Amino acid sequence: MKYAFALLTFCATSIAMAAPRVNSGGGGWACRKNDSTGQVMWIKAADLTKVEFYTPGAGLKELSGDRWTLLKEQHARIEKVVPILASLMRLHPFDIANNLVAIPDALNFVPDAELRYKPPASSCVGGLVSYVQLADTTMDGKVIYSSRVWNMPEFSEFHKAAILLHEEIYFALRESLGDESSYRTRQLMGLLYSNMDENTLRQAVDYVLQSKPRPRPGIFGFENVPALFNVDLQCNISFNNGPVSFAWKPQTPGEAMTVSLEGLQFRVKTSVTDSSPLQLEILDEKTNVSALLDEAQTVATFNALRRTSVILKLGSELTAQLYCDSNSPLEKDPL
Image 1 (tube, one colour):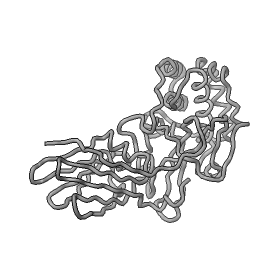
Image 2: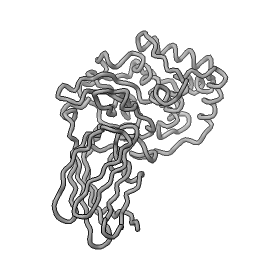
Image 3: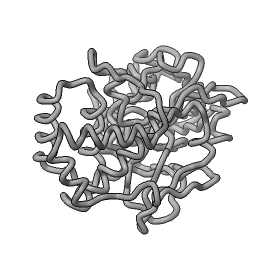
Image 4: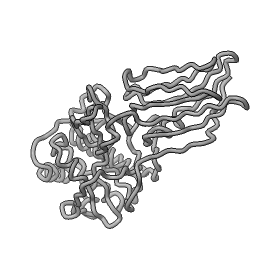
């Protein structure tokens, strides 16, 4: 017999929000060594993740050159191949070169969860892949970025140019079509950086622009989205009485984990991408009664959060409390 978890208490600490913003979604992924050095091995624009890692034959080719030259080359290609997008960008041009503002600190996380793909663990051997905010548009039209991150050689000019193009396209879509979410912008970016032939690309872009824009989704735009931050967690769980502590290490993606305590089992189903928690279940081994926190609820609990506390109730007698906090030294030095 299964019951749904009753979420009696949910409290979490996420990255603080600061100045007003327009939800620009200029994010990326960083691969860093999970040790005291926190060495950055690569930084990539989130928009290109599907093309690079999950689209067989898409052929993402990282071109050389400075960001502005690469951006101009994309402008020329858009003008030539996808006139409908080019017309929107001409109608609402964004002078990004004169609106970039460097700040010395890490950018606050923008809760724009139009992210469906995360680089697999195999792309970051010896490290962890976590979300990093690479750019953000403020209400006065400035695009702010962290000078520390953008000066890192591990963040290539190719991926910087992709972030700049993202901001330009998203501005045009907001102004002309009223987009409140970067979903269509991410779709367009993936198409523009694929190796589609011109006719197929033109048709695909037209289809995206003619589709209905998604409303602003809050933090979670999809079910079963990847964990934004690293999943090296230290957790405590208690069933009515004593707590049990365990480490949540991203060792074998997709592997289930079970913790037993006094005839009760706490089961965790994990993501095949990064071992982040997908589904939580408590099972009473004597009665075979279980309570399940489904994937949508679990992902929403852990996705954009570095630490979380959840109180769960099974029937009238069993109360379970789960508390997890990041166990990674990378937390001490966010990008």
